[in-house]
Image: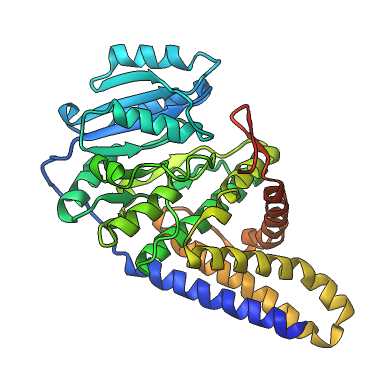
Amino acid sequence: MIWAVLIVFAAYFISMAAIVYGFKKIAPFSSETEKSKTRFSLIIPFRNEAENLQALLESIKKLKYDSELLEIIFVNDASEDNSETIIFEAIEKSKFSIKLIQNKRISNSPKKDAVTKAIKNSTFEWVVTTDADCEVPENWLKTLDAFIQKNNAVMVCGPVIYKSSGSFIESFQQLDGMSLQAVTIGSFGLNNPLLSNGANLAYKKEAFLKVNGFSGNDHIASGDDIFLLEKMKKAFPKQVHFLKSKEAIVSTKPQKKWKDVINQRIRWASKTSKQKNTASMFLGILVFLVNVSLLAIPFLMAFNPQNLFVYILLLSAKIIADYLVIRQVAVFFSEKIVLWKFLWLPFLYATIVLVVVFGSFGGNYSWKGRSFEKQ
């Protein structure tokens, strides 16, 4: 048993070292003073987001970008609150062109349907997506435009961070989000992108059409970002990039209840078995095994006391390795984490991983007031 645990942890530490190496390989980007040229269609699907839309619209209002180079398309996905009213009021006051269209469900994925319909109604050559519970920085599009001008890109993935007031549930989501950003940026640095986030994603419309959009995975409710990334990097292996810039960081709101945190992660996990990237599946299995081993360590200490020192060493090494990985991401996002506050994370995270994995076996979850079944 001890050898199995050692092998799993060794593979995990090697993977974390590779992620750190890949993260450092991606150089930070500065927009400098380029004259804006890229025309963007900003697409924002929403469902019952009245409490979040005002903050998003305020951040959009502050965007430093030529209004002639930007159109904004909101897609209403059967909202039952006053989201539409808030957007209509914004249309009257905005310096940017804002359109509101209605989603039409044609698949098991409302968001993919919404993005597809918006693209059909879009005018410009670059599509940018974000979520209604996000806020965007003022130089977001300016930085993205400068990056596109300097790189022969068809897809650009950007950084996303969870806001946190310091509460237990929000701190967990922020740290968890930073771990995902570490894997995202690190995998780009290793030339094998594994993750992307639809809250900060841009791609050429013609490239989207060339890979047939979300066709082939629109029966899966989530994954509009991951599956499109897989298609794009297969069709355009040298033209998919990550924009590592503080000026391009999009912030998103955390969930308020643990039930919603679990459902959100079951939604994410439901697409994992459908991914075709071997490295992604390997890393997912490895993380699961490490977390199972982590929860088993207290029992192993009790029933196998002769290896007590080894188990304590592994646990300590796991905490330090995770801390070092997330710390470099926290520095990029200008967030501070301290080691003693980090100590509670491994066992909580391991518990949630198990709950999510077993929950995803059934495949059923609720999101935005809808129930989804495993496909």
